[in-house]
Image 1 (cartoon, rainbow over the protein chains, first blue to last red):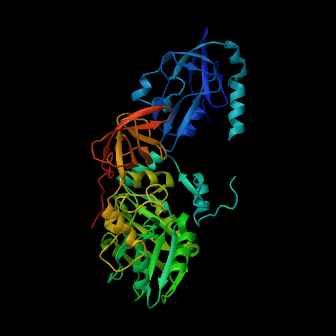
Image 2: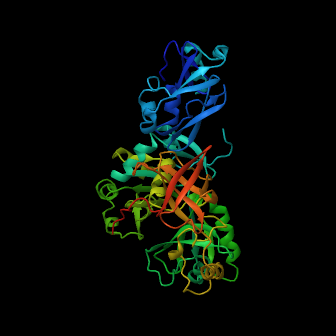
Image 3: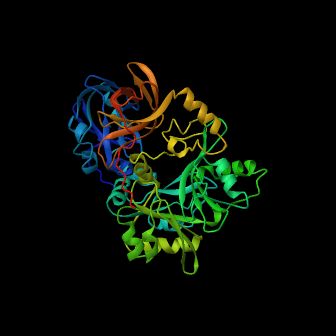
Length: 128
Length: 366
């Protein structure tokens, strides 16, 4: 059973979003890190890059494959988690304590398309 | 779900172990049981076992067997002692590689076993039949009747003797084999493998293979999937057909010239290899070590000073060496050791340095 955290929003591509005003903190879920296996690299955008909801903003590399990361919201990247550059395995250890990017949202109403915890748990059940 | 996938005799065991299964060469094969990293490390530090029953077994026999095998095989089997194993390739007339394979000299005059890649069984069998015209030989594809397990890692010999009690096989030297028996049935044991470690490969009928697997599993040998088979062979610089070898890649370009014996009589592909050797190579497979940890995957483009330099054939973040490395087919002069190149990974360029492709020092015994 994958872990989830109450209060976060979730995408169908298994990213989580934490909301603080118009800043969205984005990471990958426990379900995602488990499915990917041991991660060896996180490819992140740069600060000030624009990201678009539903479009790829980076990737995570496991032994076998690279998996694209999809932005759950649109906006401008205001911060990246540089700790992941040398320690991508943090995403395996605790995917909710280790965010990937922070985005200043250009359209916070996009959050309404994301799932809450209960809906995401149900979604993961169906994915199996 | 993929339709019509073949299953090896060990399929039910993989499913019971909850392996992650994936189609490979027409078979539904285990990619990993627990994690590629754990399984990889088990083989480097202890012992792991692989179901490689999908590999092909083709038997060649008859008065002209030696002449015929030497005509289609790049290495020289002339006067090969019984029980010896040789690596080499089937070449096409253009000097490209039809397949890479092992030839076992059986303990009967004029009898050879050819062990070929699963993906190429039909192609190789057809190739052998076509080229057997005029030779007094029988070519039999027995791939469906044989299962195979590879026991690999520094502790393989301990399991061979302590658990399987096949003590005689411990005296085998690398690339040789013995005819043994298990429960009264034929068992071939060779000191061969595809991981860069010491190890043994077992060939037998399916029920025997299942029995061997169960005994090894009970003794605690780590079941290993095709995922780590690839990371292991890659670190050791061993080629995989379809990546470092193909119908349009010369063994010289793959760095396997030592397995093409140009001093032996006419064989298929010889003229083309000789010609290429005289003309000089225009491209070659090399290693690249990346500065960053991004992973260069097969098919990614390599540039040097803004110029197109070649393409990645296999790449990983090396589990044993903890750095990102890849093998790539590069044009000359970018193949020179120490050349700085850039690998295009998604939208970015990652710098790296050309190096030898044997990233990991192999630990073969005897």
